[in-house]
Length: 445
Image 1 (tube, rainbow, N blue to C red):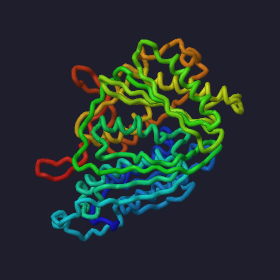
Image 2: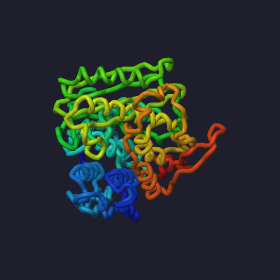
Image 3: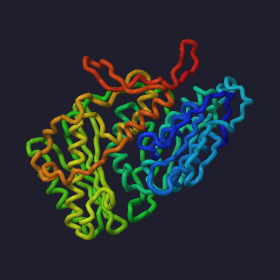
Image 4: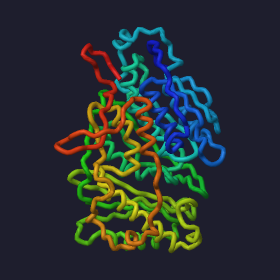
C-alpha cells in the first residue's frame, strides 16, 4: 500500500504522563488511536515507570506502534523495548504537494483490501482492540484531515499471531460472544467488523506461551458514528460457558461446570445454559468464559479467567485438579453475577473499550446506569456456594475505566456528565461528532 497524500497541517502535540491512572498499556493504546484519528502528535513520557521490573515499552507495544506508524505514515521516536519515552507524529511522512479536491474526483477501485499479518508476544485480542479504532475511522480521518483516500483500502484483513487465551486480556471467544454483538448495538455491525471463524489456539500465561492465530475483517466507516444510549440490561436469557482444560480432564471439568451452573441459576428463571468444551493444547492450562445474553433491552456481558495466575488464585490449588476446576468455575460464576449486579448494558471491560467510540460519536452516548452495584439478579440463586462464600471473589479492581476517560479528556476535552434521556438521568458524554460536515460542507472533527 503506497502512502496517501495530504495537505500539510500543523498541530500542537499532546503530552501524556505514562504513570497516570493505571499507568500501563491502555495509555499507549488510547494515545495511538486518538493521535492517528485526530491527527494529533503525541509524546508519552515515563512509560510504565510505576510497573514492576524494567518498565517502559513491552515488545507487544512496539509492534502496535510500528503497525500504526505503517498505517498512518507516521514519524516515530523511541519505539524500542523498555523505552520510557515515545513520540508519535501521524501522517508526517506524507507528500504535501497534492491537489486533494482533484484527487477526490479521480476514479477509485470499487474494493481495495489491505492484508496485515503481525506476530507478537501477548494477547491477540488486546492488539485488535488497539488497532480497531483507527481502522474503523480511517476513511473519515482521511476526509477530515484532507488526506487522499485513493490509496486508503475499503477493507482491512488483520491476522494476528499471538495468544488467543491470555491472562488479563479478552479471549477470542469473549470477542465473538460479547464484544462483537455489543459493537453492533452501538452501530458497528458485522458489515464493518467480523472475526473469521477459523483460528488457532494460543496461550499467554504465567507459565506458558504458545502463539495462536486469529483474523479480523474491518471495513472503515463511511459516515460518522451515531450516538447510542444503551439502557440497563434486560432479563438474562442465556448463559454460555466456553471452557478449555487438559484433554484428560475435560469430562471432569464439564461435569463440575454443569453441576455448578445448574445450582447457580435460579430454577424458575427460564435461563438456557450452554456449555462448549475444548482441549487445551498445553497441559495444566485452563480457561473459562461465562457470557450472558439479556433481552428487553438487549445486552451482552461476560466474565472470564485463565489459570494459572500467581497473583489471582490461591497457591494451595497447585497440583489439585479438583480444587482448580471448582475454584475456577465458582470464581467465574461470582464474577458474572457481580457484573450483572451493576445493571449496566455492558461489563466493566467493555466500558473501558468503548469510551473512545462514545467520545467520537454524534450526540449524547451512554452505556452506564446510575444505580451502581445494587441491582438484584433474580436469575441467580444467591445461596449457591460461589455467591455465598466470599473466598471465590477475585479482586479485579483496576483503573482502566478511569484511564480511558482521562485519555478522552486529554485528546478531546470531553468528560463524563449527566443528561436527561427518555425522562431519566444518564451518565455519558456528548461526542465530538468526528467526520461530520459543517454548514459549508466542510468535514470537521
